[in-house]
Image (cartoon, rainbow, N blue to C red):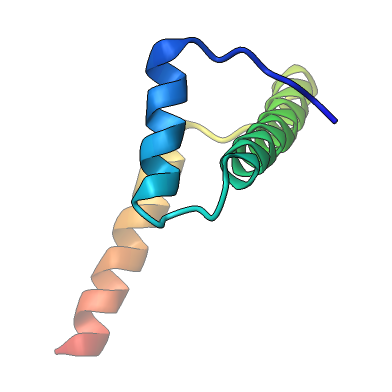
Length: 85
């Protein structure tokens, strides 16, 4: 079992969350907080992996100019507009 000193402001907020019925207990609030931290860290690791892949692509010359990318986007937008008319 974990015992945590949160300090008055956080302790008050946790109590408010429980009192409002949003959470059934202080433990539920803390579990949710830990789950959110885990999720954020997982997302950060995934983002870091994507950035590293992008950096590797740049170093290997696997890139497109902004002009080419925006040109392709304009063509797709125009095609979508024409389909809807």
